Image: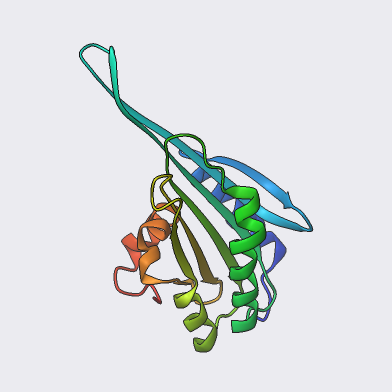
Length: 183
């Protein structure tokens, strides 16, 4: 089991991930947020509206956003997971959560890619999920999820509540590993 991720292999992973997400997301490499740079950033925006009687009366409209960040780490520990979870709840939220009129949901996910994730760290990933309402749900809600990718074992670690988020980022993982998700 290697202690590092070869740069060339990681670039191939980023290329494949970018290509896969590009169908639904706007994708940017080396995305800066304050003092951090993320290897890949994917943003999804959806607006849904419905009208009644030939577009004369708007019945409803709502917006859904998803922000997915990818970052390679040489080593990940429970403390590191907790540090990044706090970062997402503060700095990440400040930069990614935008609440327009008719906001419904914003999903913010950070995928930490590491050569190896031990069981204690996997447990920290299983707890790294937050959902919050905005103005008593009058402005919708937001979800924050941390996802761990064990490079050597090809396993994902995340909170059960993040299933839908993980499935949207790694659909092939669910197809090939129906019971081996590492949750």
